[in-house]
Length: 250
Ligand SMILES: [Zn+2]
Ligand SMILES: [Zn+2]
Image 1 (tube, rainbow, N blue to C red):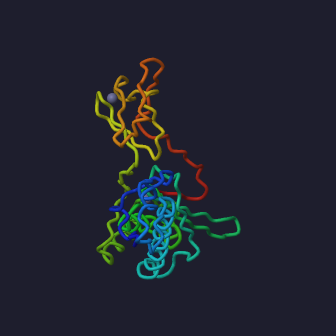
Image 2 (image 1 turned 180 degrees about the horizontal axis):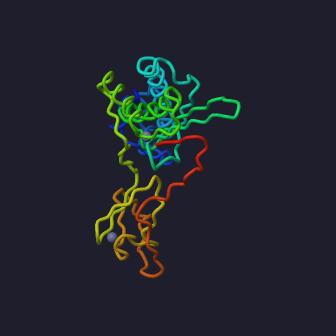
Image 3 (image 1 turned 90 degrees about the vertical axis):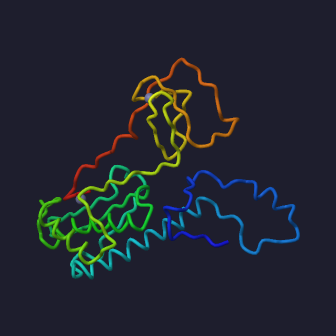
């Protein structure tokens, strides 16, 4: 079995906790004549890990390449690319810090749950590299998305037609689990089955019941009781904003 992980957006996204269907495992014992030549079990977790490893490799090689071709190698080679599962508010975040001794530290945080394709990695990583360029090359720690940043972004896009840099990262997060309000049709997305329709109602209209848009196994379906339901927040949990140390931009 060949696992193709080159186009992550098209592959079905299994949440890591969900195990693959067990049907294959049950029928396996009956087919004695054709033993499987390749290991059958590719767990969702292993798949996700392989996919993530591939993205990290891609991001690092892209960083090195852009640093060489656009920034003349002036961005610190030791800039760490940090993949974060908790970063949900923005696709990427650049950080720059200089100690009293003048030692510069640079890092770029990348949102694992948003950057699910090479295209998104290209656009986001290059956006963040432009921030680092302003701080490290132009030595302007006050620069955000101003003139200097824009000129770097323009340079990247001139040389790389496959990269599109905007001042914002407007990416929708694709959630594996979604619920829809039966009253106002607002949808709620989560990374796990953390919404319990029997306990909550829609936070937008305050009355609607939420229906899962994914398949619910019948034994899990419960008859909701009308009493004691609270409303649900209309957006995923609030971003935890880290206190800035040095400069940080999304
Ligand atoms: Zn509603
Ligand atoms: Zn930015």
